[in-house]
Length: 212
Image (cartoon, rainbow, N blue to C red):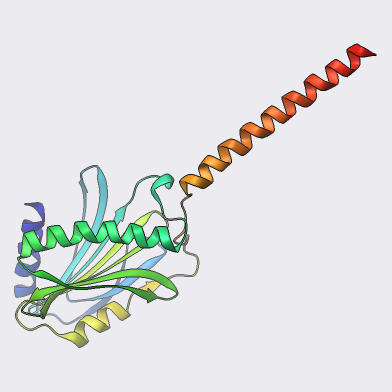
């Protein structure tokens, strides 16, 4: 229901926004994007997750930029495979809610490169005609989402220019900020082993002194 309201808000905004201005939008010092038209920003909490959003529109085109705080470090990707699995699960949620809210069907999903970082791109539409396209980027404990839609006259160049304006700063925290379960298990075993070894050494030293 919340997504339906947001989708309606996006379409409504696009009908009134005619000013073709361009401004750089960001929620932190790591990721930014250039958005057309007047920008409306909002902060909200959904299912205990903090979300920052910026929405703009020019004529029938709508641009969306969001940042979502993700869980703790144990849930974060730690290599490319875990990042890909992370995106796969994320995409399932995007597909389910987008199809339910808009009625459009998934057309394509692929992993793309943005300044050396891996992101997920998904497009939706009807009769093979694109209507909405998303790019989702995980970086440093946050999920960044960029979306473009124009239900009446989908403009491929306009969408491409928007996505190409995504900028990732060099001082970013990186994508692999988590630790694998196997690593955490090994860390615990290693720590316990060291403790046991130290205890055993102390016991042996005491025994040796007693014998003397």
